[in-house]
Image (cartoon, rainbow, N blue to C red):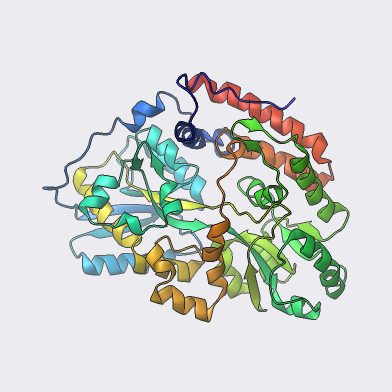
Length: 459
């Protein structure tokens, strides 16, 4: 029997898309607590969201110094420092101190949680898609709409999907910064040697047709290198699964036992363990591809610049291949938030820098340096990005692929440890040649139990 989560206790007046999305966002804030070793959260989410009083910014003077916590997405430290230099030149009364607060989004989040209530809290902090809502329900960050309006930050120019990711209860709690999708990368030299057209496979069926030709020019090696691990495997697998009409869940109904989802799992098992057209990278599939160990890979747009620099061959990029039900891609990355435990003067200065950091010119500069998507509509086809597209057309792929973006299934993104349970099942399929029908039921049961134990008590 397909497990189903009962939301009647959460919404006694009826379940609507709006309140379920709000509830889903709340769960995404608590997701992966075990995997990320973050603090537990509880209390009334709705009251937490509305607890921050409105701030009148009219007579506030910006602080003279602020601290920014970042993990330099896409090896962007030099680019971020250049952006700081440009801001300080335009605003000589404000010094921005950049701090490397972690190697990834989770490390920043854990450090931010540990610093809460101390003098070590930064003035601007990375807020990934998983973590920003947890900051909000803990009342650790402020809503940005009034501050953005005061600063004339033109939030209407943000890509609506990317900006909307940070909306709850009518307010936005972060601004998009380093946003990404997975892309299909391929080695043009091997493509040419195999007699293939210079493009990514349009479908996974077409990849299956091309794989033997690629293996033939690779001395029998598997052409596709794919990655494993939490926060990754269950992310890119969405493309294969959704393309076959499957899902981890539909709203709160688990779908891991549905034929389409099982078929997707079996396809993954087959291309690795039977067809030998794909192999699992030990550590970093993007690095392996750049080193020429695979003919193609699925990697983040944030890896684009690194891949182009490390590769000794021409790199092609394309949309993720489609399945019989269509082409789909998930989005990811991080935004930036302003902590609530700072003075209005510090928050105003942080807001001024955040406006500059995410304006059209800076997001284009950041995108050109890293491969992350420009977050403003005006920047996507502006002069800077248009020049980049001409010089390096690979950069255009991520922007164009946004039309295929789809929201994450709630079983993965909203339920604590959902991603971990799904990753465990997928790694058993990939590494142990386990049948999807043998491992998906346990993941489904574990996710259901996690919901009952870690979600229901907080409703």
